[in-house]
Image (cartoon, rainbow, N blue to C red):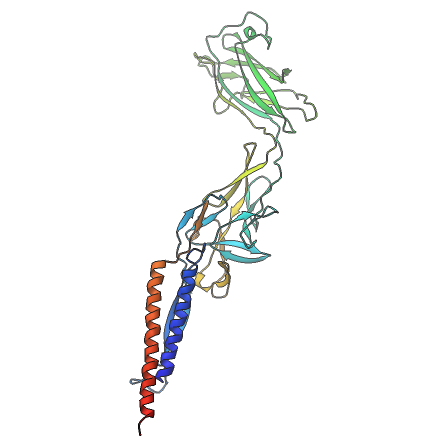
Length: 406
């Protein structure tokens, strides 16, 4: 019987060494989770006996248990590299089959999908055309097409007009600086994304009264009602009521007419104080066409596309999944797992919610293998193997002695 007991010990020690060697081999594998060997004794039992003098029958491997502890997070130079700080797995689509991983080394394939080295696509909560994240899960795709331009429709104007200014002596003429008190310029965009130079002129017409003139590419734009501003005695804007001056459609070659409204009651409203002329706000809502220049991913998983025209757009939000029993996941290799009966159903949600961790962009989670501990475990397994080998050697010697009795 000693032979079989010692043999079970050899098999168990050999399995332990296999697990340890696999851990050591994957010490530099991104997202890898170490395993440990768990043993159980083999003991013959009988229902009608107390077995007070029974001897065990050896050992067996009861479980190879994965350790899903957090690995070290190291920074990289790739903004699409992602690491999960806390619990949760990336949800990936492998030709339609859903798998899970902690390895976040992602890139973009030829179709614009965010994929790993196995061409498994990262899934996310997708955004609609307006950039609002919906509850729909799908493969995350970067739209590499140019973003459409937007014509300028509103300009927020915040300036201070000098209360001590006097009315110019000559009639207004944009080419004569003596015919107006102040001016400022900004870039406007038409429906094709072409830029146009807009220039605002301010001419004092009396105490607390000013006339404004808008010229686009050197041609005058006509206000629908009046381009005049008046101020209260405390320097605040009195008219127009609401602070807006609308202009008739301004013809632009090859594009839609520019329909502009200038808002003088913006967050930095136009005033008339006893100080020099100053521009505090001159913001317009138009922009040219733009190309994709980069992607930013926040800790909550929100994915923002940046374009060369200064605009940004939300593409979606990374989805994470967690399980009631991660140790029950079925290993698929390539640091991916699949749902199983033992793991329970996936709990999919947004990073930072419920039990899910947060996402760190430009970083990768290293293997959680403790190399020093594994080397110590390897020595222990080696000694275990040697001891069981010695038991077999001793049993062989005893058996040979018995055989040699005459």
